[in-house]
Length: 595
Image: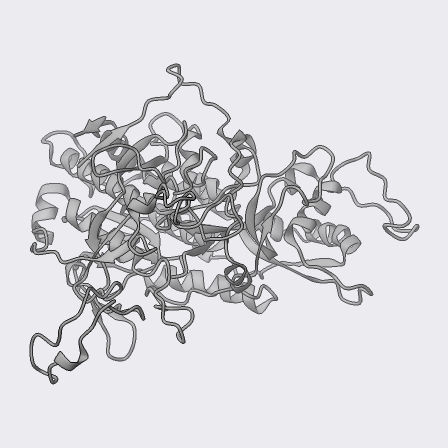
């Protein structure tokens, strides 16, 4: 396998402003997908501007919600002032409620971490102002810019904008600058469609290419328009040591948290179908879930939907579904099997680990920023509290295979709630690995682009990972730039895929007259069925699969450190300082290159 860290291209550690790249972002998402998730594309050519704030970049966001820090949501005077300003545009901000997680008030953990978690943002809904006598277009960007305009001292309200007797409210700029759009993030398995054109879903063009039959630049990664295809694997699952052996050698099993689509049935992962619905997990199997975190995500999302944040797809459990958003057509969703495939990569490279699968992504490849921050907040809280038998409290590595292009410039991203959530985990000694994205762009793709954000001495920065071809060259679809710090295999990767997925596509040729009666084998004669994954394996391409390979390498480095005699790096040694020491050693001992 190929792998390497990429040194800064300027040779002196300086970074370029890659945000000057012209790629416009996720502008090609289909209208039906945007409607399903209550989202809009921010077009810089049409976006409202405010004095003192730069022109935005293109992005995709939920139209009816803003991400507001929890401490501001609990400040009644601030919310009253915000709503007084939003009256100008016929909107009102509805706080999500006063049901803060009581565990955040614990005195059993690092108070600096818990304070940071208390300040993380939550989704707050925008609704029409009661009694407003005009039709209102509920738009989060308009609301955000209206709040920003209210921070500008020299911006008097004209009489045609508000009643002459209305006293102008001025908001604190530092507080308003902590309010954000709730971005739509997209997973990183797609390499079809073009970010620079109005059609397609994401990634660079995989179509017919130039006129005259010249192949497109990503045709080699596709199988009849799809970047995944079924394959047969003739290997036994990699041997996995017993829990007792792991305790003896390493202190415990390492735990890799994967925030993604959730899992489905596969024997390598210890996941089986439940006849009553959902799935069962083998005790001590390779994959585990956390019902408490899933319930917390569902609770926050349901509350947002109930308070006017519709349309919003609420993630209610840990299982990857539905197979198809349109059951009348039956085409398998773009990200279906995504987490199962990622878990299989980890199973191949570091079989001693346990994967904690946390579902935040819909099977149509969409993730809400609010759901991610919620999951990260609860994960960080559990690690900080450190209950000895709590699997979530033992997370060593976090693998993220999704992202978005921000409307904000690099410096402004220091205020991002997503960054503060990730930074809390880093401070607890968790190694965070993120996919660089598949848009063939130098434009920063977050959270991977947080790799260039500084962290304190003794902590490990975010590991952003681009995709390599089979021969070790950079994959044509992969994003690139000084913010991509490492590279790993991501083209035509083979891994586990749910055995209970059989989409609506059919073989090009089938001979029905040769079909055998039920119970006879083989059942008939036909060409390859392009979306029958009952054999349990697939070939797939994307930086989505580079990131878990890198996560597996750093996990393996953790195990090597834990096994070294006298190193004091056993995984069961408690404390934030010990976790940070293990993380720094594992990161520092990673090979600079392989292959």
